[in-house]
Image (cartoon, rainbow, N blue to C red; front, top):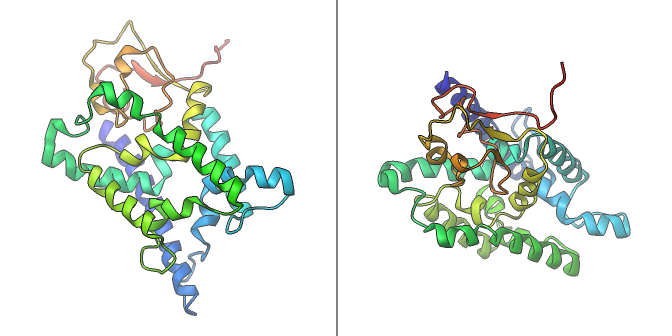
Length: 275
């Protein structure tokens, strides 16, 4: 049962990774007069919900979008927020192609370093480093407002990953992509954990999500399997309701995946059920 559930998430991740890859390739091909049938030729900017976030200020003040940002980004941002209010950052844990990319590299890291993988950064430092992404978000938002253009593209490893074959990629984004690849061999999802500005935004919704992950103290046997399986190093075994801003809603800690006791770590509504 557990393996089947894990495969569903993996298949969804692979689907979106391949989809974005094909769309990006098709965009490049379309500029040369050829294209892959039935595959959209949209720019990655049109498919990124974070584009909607960074253009909010300009849209509210002028009614226009920042250059390269499309209406679709705004729509995807709203959809992402609605999903996050309900289930937290599902986008991060199930859909984001760059998160998937890091996760797959991490599988190699697990084979190399075994139990040391994702445990290289001491907790006393890690607990502070996790807030770096909020500073990154603040900088990106401020710089975008001041410049009136898409600043983040120049340092965005996601954009570099799916566009490294064309001349639009800034050196900064290539460098950050390379560093992320290396770190992914040691740390699970290093970009997501420490630097991703969109992950920072979605992480806030963990504080108010309607369907949080809960741990049943009465049935918990304190095996800490939930802790060991959490890619974001959240101490699930020490919490009753997971409200950590780092949770990516991958559900790896739940009884459907790793917890050996049924109905002990589950995703449930905070709204009491009345029969």
